[in-house]
Amino acid sequence: MEPDRVGRKIGVGFRVASGMLRDRASQTTQSMQQQAPAYAERARVAKREGKRFGQSIWGPFAHAGSVLWLEVTGLFFGLFGVYFAQNAYKLRQEWHAGPEHTKFIVYCAITLVFLYFTFSSFHNARRKEKLKRERAR
Image 1 (tube, one colour):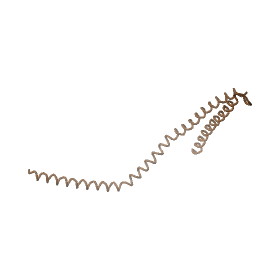
Image 2 (tube, one colour):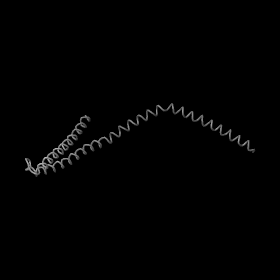
Image 3 (cartoon, rainbow, N blue to C red):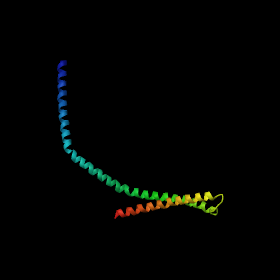
Image 4 (cartoon, rainbow, N blue to C red):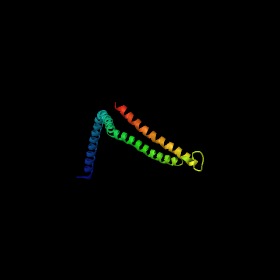
């Protein structure tokens, strides 16, 4: 074969193949555009149902974990409050005047702050439980 004829035949073959490829690509694009709304609806449904599944599985664990966290935090605040109350009790004789009067006042103030944190933490935990029960009804 002559080199010119070989080049022409290969070139024509490439042009025909590229034309066929363009035709198939345009047909696929048109069919995908027709099917796109159906796939989009399926994707929306799958997303919504996946979210509901995740909430049904993870929701109770997250709720229990948050309530438990509030209760444990309240316990630790209570321990610190008891510690400072104990020190304030030891210094109770210094109420009116004395060298330890300032420490006594500070211990009383810190005790009140930690006891407030304790009760507010347990109150928030109870409130979360109550809201959960009301939503379940």
